[in-house]
Image 1 (cartoon, rainbow, N blue to C red):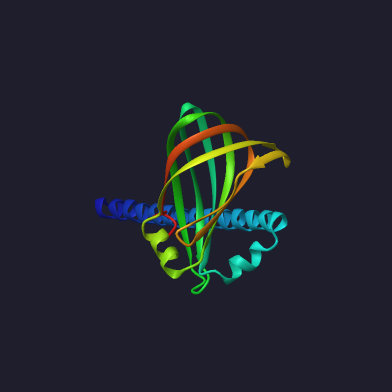
Image 2 (image 1 turned 90 degrees about the vertical axis):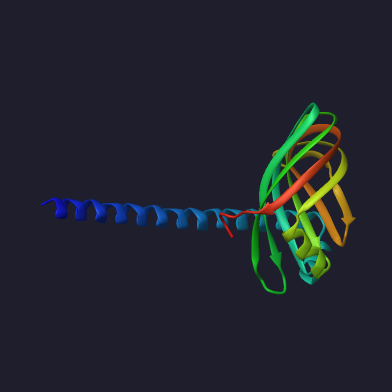
Length: 188
């Protein structure tokens, strides 16, 4: 009798564990699909604003698309987000996270997208492996529901062209900030 009760509990444990594992795989696939959908939407928006970028991305070693929310309160700035890098040669995706912190004067909240175009294999591999940038930022934006004005721009750093699109937000800031990108261990 004790042995059969133990077997029933063991079977229930195995079923519960396998259900949790299956649920985790579904969650991971859903998260990946949400990130890929975000990537597609951001690229569509970028191509409307700058049609020539489509050829640049197609001919590049790879590209990345990230979504980020940033909060700036007087002297401190913090933010975080997620995204994906695509290697155009291998067609492989690397899912990543990002976080940022900075100091400087400003006030605001901003929801923005970053598009990174990697022009060399080295810049692509180095970014995936190390993913750290440090820089100064000055921006002004006021945008809500596709209305408003945003100054973000385009810059080139270490064989990477970076585009920024403001989704929503209101900010006026000048900061020195560090941004860390790293592989999302859960999704890779």
